[in-house]
Length: 242
Image (tube, rainbow, N blue to C red):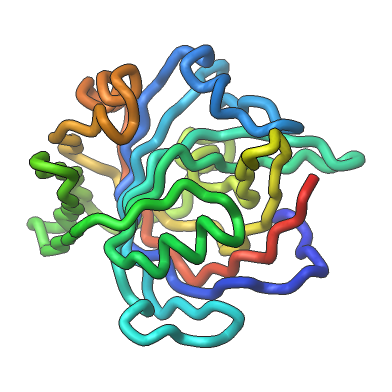
């Protein structure tokens, strides 16, 4: 894991029940979103766009809990980048959009990181499914009802070294492009996550107005892979401008 930054923890929380749908895309589709100072990261020569739904629990900002903003759902659309800092390679995530049900959560993230948050009505459902789990996240956008679902089987386990699951879950930095062309970098601390083998996984909806036609078309195709991650406690450090 990347070394801690001296700037301190901005947010602490738990991220749980992460449903992750991965779509292999042409790198050219993402180039316009790549922040200055970073480059696209790939696994075995493949570039991925991921739709991720999860539960955001026990959230604290600067160690303070905001009433009615401790526990909520989030769905984000993200891809993967890397940046060199001396002899260290920092592997990170860039968010195209992040959806939460609380307007204050969205406002704080936009203010401090210029992350592209939006507040929408959301829901989730987690229930036993034989020897595993069935997880569903839903959100409304305009007249569209959007849903992502995933089913998981058996006990969770740590990903194998070099696996796609390890690549997707073990990016410990975040990068956010700024309006003036700059970039903010921040560290995200968490232990490696156990993941479940998955059965069915799908997205159903219409997000063209929010994501654009090309990305919406990708999401309405079959994912190249999908898995459910157990999650853990996390800490998001204060960002710094590159």
